[in-house]
Image (cartoon, rainbow, N blue to C red):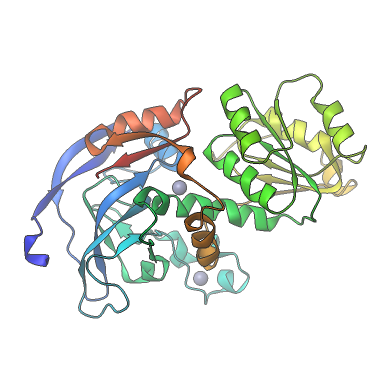
Length: 355
Ligand SMILES: [Zn+2]
Ligand SMILES: [Zn+2]
């Protein structure tokens, strides 16, 4: 199998702000504790879009971290994984041993902050290439994809993991009412996971197509975020109590303020999309201190949740197949990123596919 591997491959290289180029680069070499994966599908993630559009990291890099594919080579010391295995990858894996990890703050672990999957240059995920090298510290994050499931489902494990991590930060009881503001792919997955837990989910968005889908996925109420009667509807639904929690899955300040206003005392607001540094807001801090409304965030994934995530996705309890609306070949990765950055009423999750 290994002797059939080519010396070079196609990859989409980030060369500067909004500058993605298809180039011929060397197929990565692997060490004794590493594996090489032929990429089948890689999802386009908003965090990659941000880096490409604002140039927040120096080029050159090969992005793409929601990756699924087939193992084509394993290092001599690798066990438990073999050539031919269909796998989903995880590019950030914590050490489980440091100060941050002992506090379950995995996304703050120094090892976690390193990217352990690469197609060349500074490691950046590498999923927009034909092959990726998975470094040894990322092997615990590799999940085998069952026969009956697709590579696309495998590629969704990473984003689903980030959503489940966010859900678990909320202190909820069955029957609680939670707002999920923004019904893009991430917001819709929040809606579904919360509905599965017996939560009354209120969803907002400005696109009717997305509100319709939110209803299908279990939302109790799906309403435009700018609807004048939204506060009244929430009051009615919660018998005057207010929201128990709100997930802000769109980076809009007005939405955060609206949610803070609709929240009951000691409720929780989870920021999930405010990833741009330097964004300030003028929230009345007495709502945090006196009304005990918690303002918190969740970022990236938690590898310890991976078995639960795999079960949810592969059992199709959380059926991600309907969320993938657009597929682009590798050579058109730039178009895929553009569409994900400027969604249309019909577009949800966009993936780059090589199958
Ligand atoms: Zn992502
Ligand atoms: Zn650690």
